[in-house]
Image 1 (cartoon, helix red, strand yellow):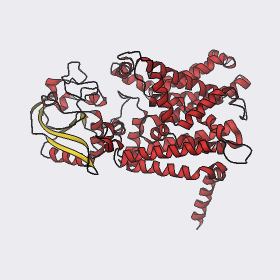
Image 2 (cartoon, helix red, strand yellow):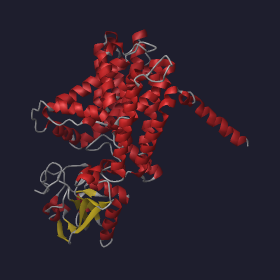
Image 3 (cartoon, rainbow, N blue to C red):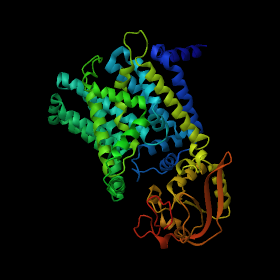
Length: 539
C-alpha cells in the first residue's frame, strides 16, 4: 500500500503542472479537433508501411557512419539507436518522431510563457491546433524523415538565441549558457538537414541589423559558440573529406543543373507553399506581415523573437523563390520558414478579455476542418489505397508503399535455392523497403542513380555470388543489369493489387555469378549502368 501511495504521489507531482493546460478555455474549445488529429496520427504511425524514404533512412541506421550521401546523419543515428533498443516495427520506426514532437511541444509552451506570461498555455493550444491542421507539418512531423528533428532543433536553437540576445540588450552581458546551447542545437539541426543554414543566417542577420547586438562581434563568446557549431557538424565534414565531398556535389548538381529562366515558377512555388502550409495559416501569416511592427504589443517583455523569426522566414523563402526562377525548388525545402511564426500567429486568434476563447473562430474552424480532411485523406492514401488508383494507375511513390509482404515472400522463396545469395534491387527506394520488410540491412541497390548503398558496395565481398534481383515498372531490370551476371534465370512477375486494382508490377530475376570485379564500383565513372536521372528507363 505504501508503494502504491508513493506511485500516486509521484504521478500527481508529474501531472500537476499539466492540469492548468487542460483547464484552458482554448483546450475546451478545440479538444475534439485535437483528439481527432491525435487519432489520425496514431493510425498513421501504427499502420502506414514505411514510405520508401523512411525505409531507406532506417537502412542507414543499420549502417552507422559519420554521415551519408543524401543527408546528414542525425536522423539515421536515432533510427539505429531505437532499433537497437526496441527492434523493428512501424511504431519503433516513428518513435523518434514522438520524442521530437514532445520536445517541440514543450519548447513552444516555454516560448508562449516567455512571450506572453501566464497566457502562454492558452496560446500553446492555439499553436498545436494550427500546426496539426497544416498538412505540411502533420506529414513532416509524422514521417520518419529528417525534417521532424530539423524543425525541433531549429526552434530550440532559436529560442535560446533569443533569450541570450534579449538579456544581452539589457545588461550587455547575457547568459553564456543560452548562447552555447543555441550553438549546440544549431549544429544538431545541421546534422539533421542542410537547410538548417537558414537558421544560422537568420541569427547573423539579426546581429547585423540590431545596433545593440553588434558589439557581440568583438565578444570571444560568439566565436566560441561558432566553434561549438562547427565541431558538432564535424562528422559531416569528416565523411565528405573521406568521400571526395560527395554530398556537396550531389546538392550542387541538384540545385544548379540545367538553369532555365521561368518567371512564373516563383508564383507556382509560393502558391504551393501556401496551400500545403494551410490556407488559413498562410492568410494569418500575410496578416501578420501587414502589422509586423505591432506584433510584439502583447509581449510581457521586449524581445528579439519577431526579428529572428522574420529574418529566418525572409531568408529561407527568398532563397527558394530566387532558386525557383532558374531551377528546382520544392515546397518542403522551405519548412524552416514557418515554425517560429506559430507563436505569433496564435496571438492573432487569442482573445484576452475572456469573453470567448478565440478571435476569428470561423477561420479557426475552417482551418481545423480543412486540415482534418486533408490529413485523413493523406492517411487513407498511405494506409488503405493510393487515392490516385481511383483515377488510373497509382502514382509510383505511393504504389511503393503496398505489397511488401508478398514481395518479400517471393524474394525469400527464390533466395532459398541459392547459397549465400545477394539481395539486389534496381532503386534505393525498393532496396530500403525490401531491407525493412526482411529486417536485412545487407540489401543493395544497383542503379544508374548514385545513392547511399553505393558507398557500402564491396567488390571483393560481392564477386561471384548468386543473387535475387528485384525491379519494377518504375525502375525496370535492364539489359545492363542482366549483363552483370554470368547467366540469369527466367523472370518472375508479381502484380500488387489493392481491392482489385493493380498498383505496381514487380519483376524478379535470379542471377548467377555476379561479375563485381569485372564491373567495378558504382562510384567509378565507368560503371556500366546508364539511365535517366532517376533510373526510370533503360538506355
